[in-house]
Amino acid sequence: MLVCIFTGFSSGLPLYLLLNLVPAWLKTEGLSLKAIGAFALIQFPYTWKFLWAPLLDRFGLIAWLGRRRSWMLVSQLGLVGTIAWLGQLSPTQNLSLVVGITAVLAFLSATQDIALDAFRREILPDVELGLGNAIHVNAYRIAGLVPGSLSLILADRLPWSVVFLVTALFMLPGVAMTLLSKEPAAAKGAPRTLRDAVVEPFHEFFTRHGTRAALLVLAFVFLYKLGDSLCTALATPFYLDMGFTKTEIGLIAKNAGLWPAVIGGILGGIWMVRLGINRALWLFGVVQVASILGFVWLAWLGSAPSDAARLAALAVVIASEAAGVGLGTTAFVAYMARTTHPSYTATQLALFTSLMAMPRTFINASAGWLVERLGWYDFFWLCFFLAIPGMLLLVKVAPWNGEPKAVAGAPERA
Image (cartoon, one colour):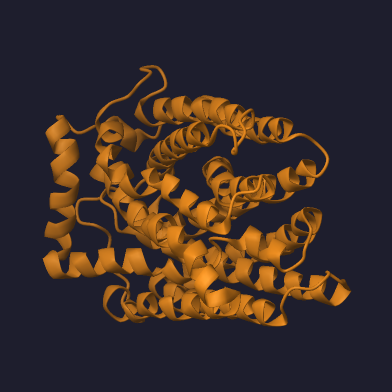
């Protein structure tokens, strides 16, 4: 469970940097909402990581660290250097270089995620998946307070170059975890050939489920987080447009979501032990969808100089979103981990998380365009309705009274 804290924090920090800090940086440097929204396309490595995930299943980089930890260490050190370098650039004077560096940052982050997801799945026995992934998701969201809160507060007082350097240093606890942890016993059985690492994960998945059922699972993975992902794609620019300062966003908007997310996620993990993952997907998914309505309400209030009432409204909306999305993500991540086969953990999890990231990368790139044409109020209503199809697929992929048996041939992992 302690290791899951560090895997979550290390995984979340670079992604939230791309989602929260980079858009705020670009907006304060004068880029348009349409350009900022298009920057979501730079996250394309998150949607294609299943293409190089077989390399992480088949090969290690540093023999004494093992397959999982060697990839973790190399990607983490690369992230430290890349984040620090990004802050030395100017989006207006070096836009093409900024695009290139953020793309490299996303690639390193996606590679780290492949290794961390497989590492976490291999150290957690099946009975601990719910609680372990709840802790991982909570730490993941807590990591968002660094680029989404601390860094924004610092940006009102320090140059952006210093802000990005400080943010980069928060990757060092993950480096320490990688060096001090042990390689999972399950990670020692690498696929014998690269072909086995590339082909067999997909063959095994479709054979186990059947083609039709497997496609429904993949559609569910794509759609379940679509609505809330699009809803928060331009959250920081939305708060700024509503009249809140960067310091207010840092102190109130982000911190208001911390404890609801932590408490909700931990309780969600404990509830999953009793409820089962299927029922958790239903119950937590309803809360997740309903939380989008808070953004509709905040957009309806409109922009005005921030006062105590509007700050309280912002805190309530963000707290509700954090609790709802935190619960939904906890159940969702546990579902994806449960669906993998132990022999192909990295590649199958990379496939699932790539599909989960596609809305965030490609559909979210249109968020700025949609806001300019619809306005914030209608945009958030659209997000609400886009969240419904994923819930409807639960009838097929995770029926209320149906918990699947363990994957055939899967040893109990510890």
